Image: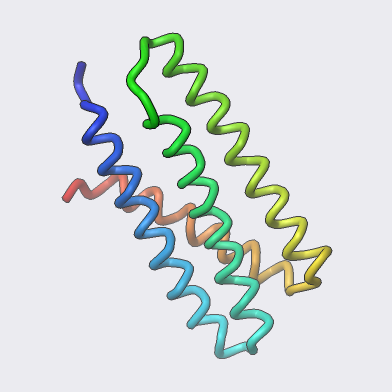
Length: 121
């Protein structure tokens, strides 16, 4: 086994914290355009972080065999995308926040993935 569960949990926690940090930063950047834009951008990034947290909890909740791990990964990914799509629908249609800011926040939170996997600290 190349990676232990502890290192996977550590990486997932680091990714989650970086995504939440990105939510704060993108919210502050969009605050120059207005309060609604700032809320939409921060909410878009926070939804990505919530999806990551849900996937991490599902993936690392218990030790199991390879087949169970694959099943947990797939169900975690499905739940993650349900949270993200549902959250974006709520942001744009229910709360009527600016869609460009929300999508930008979501994209920034996913750009953090590249940094989290690139630099192992």
